[in-house]
Amino acid sequence: MEQPITEQSNPLSSNIDVASSEEIVQILYACDLEIFHGWKNSQGIKDKGLIDKIENLAKKISNVIEKPGGGIVISGCGTSGRIAFLTARTFNCYLKSKGKEECFQYIIAGDDKALFTSIELAEDDPVVGAEKLNQVCKEKASVVYIGVTCGLSAPFVAGQLDLCLSQPEKYTPVLIGFNPVELARNLDIEKWDKTFLQVAQNLEIAEKQQKAFILNPVIGSTKNELIFTKMMINIEELMSMYESVCNCVYKQSHHLGSLIDLAGASLNSGGNIYYLGCEGFGLMAMIDASECPPTYGASFHDIRGFVTGGFSALNNNDGDLSNLGSQYQISVEDFEREILPAITSDDLVVLLGEDIFQRSSKSLLDLPCKKAYVTFQWDQTSTSSTCVEFGLALSIALNAPLVDRISPDCKFLVMQLLEEVSLKWVVNSLSTGAHILKGKVCQNMMIDVKVSNSKLFHRAVGIVQNYSSLSHEESCHCLLKSIYDTDILTEEQTSAPVVSHINAASQKLMVVPVAILIAKLSCSIKSAKEMISCQPVLRKVLIQKDCSA
Image (cartoon, rainbow, N blue to C red; front, side, top):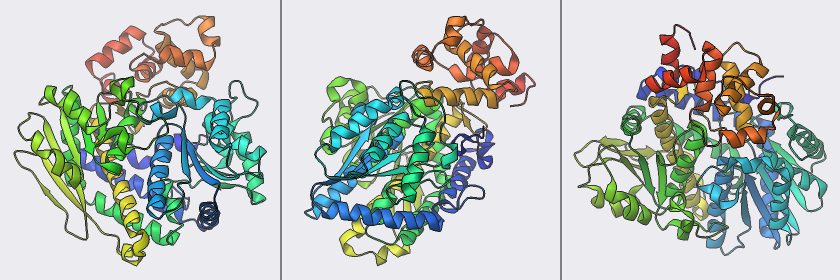
């Protein structure tokens, strides 16, 4: 079976784990340019067929906005669900400012707890997904439903798409992902009678009947906001603006490399990284921080994001969750009260945007922590400075000439979106680079993934197989040995359902790196753990053992 595009290794980043910090940024830039120019032989978001679909979908969304009783529901799991939340919030604020009904809603698997922490097992239930959508839309006459799943794999979204297909008079389903339909996941879904591939194939039939949309360019990644801003400006001009600000951000590769060095030094010395920001900047930083535990096997405390006002600024579905524990204490005020008094020289505080700099910079001046400041300016010259108070102060000049052609009615919104995606490129560079320096990546594989749901279990098996010459079944057994901490598996362990393996792995550390060493070196669990304890960078372990990665 051909490997899905979203699970394949990108040749551009094959040596990112041994690159310098500045080289890491340059590699990420090359990968992010594929958003605009496509991956390998694909056309990316400049494909005419995709542009035509977005044009037609934008008209559909505009019609829903103009008529009372309709809704646009964006749904996803993990990061896709968080971007769904941010997109719905942004466009509801815009509609409210224009005196129109706030008709955007979001759904995230695991509910609002999943906005701040990984609850990825929730994405494996298609029945719950359908129930959530039905509950949100029960009083709506017409709904554009947008399900986001990068790999065309999330059962939670599959259940919602299937519900939409069963009620075409009410729902217009839209699938956003980055694999061809034929590479959608074709594995049995527990307690359900379809695979994601079958749902996607049914969606293809509906699309031919002009009752659905599939937007699946083969690119690195993008944002749902692309669709909605099309309601206001030309799609090709919008893509040009996104590409322009991407170029502006990555022109600062040297200074972003310095930021990575600060962040890597903090993580490697046992310190933590704290993002502080206002409004969209704070929320975007929180999204970046929330990606780190499931992606890199990082601790929740390693990188955290805080936003001024906390839940009062979010307008989220479930309201204030701060009483549930420290993971949900997300305000800058929480940071100042709970974390700032105990901050150390190993920690790094990153102020994101001029508003938070004006508010919080003075309170940091006399503290021992490392400090950095990043902001954006339009049509100016980028500057970077180092000083005693701040290890790095970076002002990135954004320049997108076509912005001046946008009507004043929506120019501010578009500039806001461009700044937010620019910030995402900055913090993604920081968190990716810092975890590379900490040894969480081998070649370009994020190997220390948390085996916390079905998707990540199968991804973990694929990672083990990628670094060994073993079969899929043998690689799976190596992963199970690591999960169950045993050199000899029992029949009960090998025959257990995937959900049992996930539950057993939930509290384990370094599950996948240990499994790789077992597979590659035919060593015991104990030996694998000892090697990683002495040298956490897996590629260096393999080099020491005279075994190429």
